[in-house]
Amino acid sequence: MVIQELKRSLRVEGRWLAALEDGSILRLSENEVADFALYPGRELTEEEGEALMAAIARSTLREKALNLLARKPQSRRELERKLAEWGSEPQEAEAICDRLEELGYLNDAAYAAQVVEHYSAKGFGERKLRDELYRRGVPRDLWEEALEQVGDSSQAIDDFVRRKLRGERPDRAALKRVSDALARRGYSWGEISQALSRYEVDLEEEA
Image 1 (tube, rainbow, N blue to C red):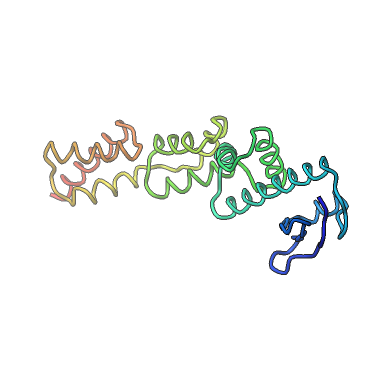
Image 2: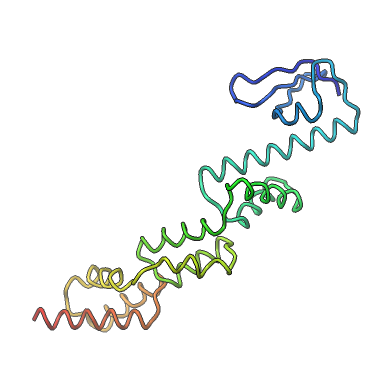
């Protein structure tokens, strides 16, 4: 492998372009240029060429992982799955995630808090929050700390019941529909029963 030409990219900061003798172009980071002492006319052995290509593949995966995290926060497990889809070996994915954690781009505790905040703000109950944390691969030892930020859900449940029943006295079928809807949103039967009782009390007071 011979580096015929080496120049900085005009489009991407920190990227270099290396033209090879076969006409192909390698996209390199500054670290790869320095680590492999690349320069125009540099001839790499077969072993050096393979090592360079492996380094480029790792850099590409890291860049894709960073771009993904910038668009949409991920848990470490989610990112490892995505890296595997992109062709990363498990050991390589682990090393990339370790590095991103060191740099602060990947943080399961902060991600857990974001997930809980997002779904609790939408009016979902604790069971739904736990389901989402599980689905997204957040380690269980981080769940309780994240869930501590959830306040009293009574108001959210009451608002939902009033919106669905519209101030009317419900029959058995209407109560079942509301109860089932709240259960799907992650609330316990105890919370649902208390909310329906509060609704009945409000109706009596209004009457």
